[in-house]
Length: 121
Length: 121
Image (cartoon, rainbow over all chains, first blue to last red):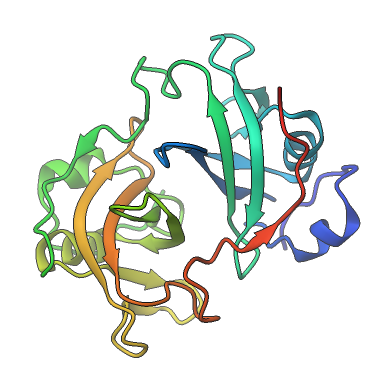
């Protein structure tokens, strides 16, 4: 049974959301104009509520166990453009306007390590 | 302690991979040219190994408990273009050439439900 945090999240959305055992769903963060996938974070109901209503992306930090409004420390703010839920309700796609680097390493995107895949035909 | 399936996955990659308690990592699937985010699936070591070496995307289906090579039933094959690991080793970005619809509903992408976010400044 998933943990569901007390939240002001819209009831219709809360009903559709399929959370993991920790009450979280992954959120893919994409730069709205270039299409670049910047990072993946995690949201509980309250983080999603804040993201939907404030114009700024808020995550639940699994490592620190606290809400994390992206950019508050680094200045690398994510301004929300749109939020979509996937067909089975267990993943979010958040399109943003990213200020500066999305990655804590200073890279624009967190996905900078290529694994050398064999390309398909 | 995460479950790690026996696999022929490259040892360097296996060392860097941070799996959840079920031995899985989320894989964001993106159309390589348009940048469209199509879906998110899950991979264990063996699914990643197959994805890296065969040119076709293979997931671990959490609902069915089996490997799932995308398109074998539907024809909606995902040809691999590249695979990247994120900075903390717990998420994959797979760029593909998607044949037909990525979503089981027949939609091109699984992210077709807009949640009506307030846009940021």
